[in-house]
Image (cartoon, rainbow, N blue to C red; front, side, top):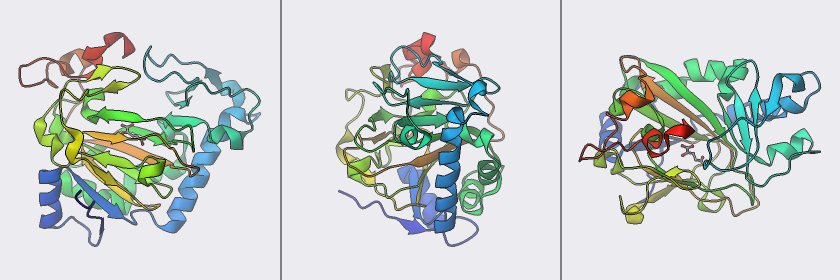
Length: 298
Ligand SMILES: O=C(O)CCC(=O)C(=O)O
């Protein structure tokens, strides 16, 4: 198995060698993108955000049960009434009567969390480490497309099956998107760290199908060459929107919180899901998106 080739961000921009790795392998992994202080602050802010539906002053602003699509995991979810923020619990969770601390150990993911937080707004707009990579890959500039906190709690954190993030998006040029996955805990195989298929972005769009989630089935690719990317808290993976990746269940007693941001280059517009079905296609021209797999889920 290849090593994950963890490197430290040293300069303002990526080196030519790092750019070459990004182009060839479709990812770069760095340690220490967030400082220990930033990791602490990020954890505290996430905890505060997740506790909000249960704080007296806030609970009237949330409602339970935004439909998540009929197959896309089945845990209960909470929707902020005033904006698009929502979070989802792991399947089969009974959340009634839980304290905010207990609730955090049931959460699967929290979408658009940055919009609720001045702290995270600053991070997504101006974090030096994030932008040293973003500015190198997209010198024309970027815009945030999506944010999610992926909480994968101990023992119950579910698998995220193999997928390409571009299959979920609807952005005109699939080469003009990038994902950033930041570990807030020590992320190892046992608690569900990221696994990538190095160079897999070069296969182009692969058909996605709905099972318990939207995924690429094994008739489309061979995950044999997959590489786990263990990261210490504050380490980050930057990856091409077409790179197939997977995270296993959290089978350990350790937490595995992560932040994930997706950016698109400024010259790469958002288009409709229907238009995108004609862009993100397999070699024979057939749509490979999650929208095409189950349009009613989108
Ligand atoms: O952090 C995880 O478990 C999976 C994240 C991921 O690949 C995704 O949500 O697209």
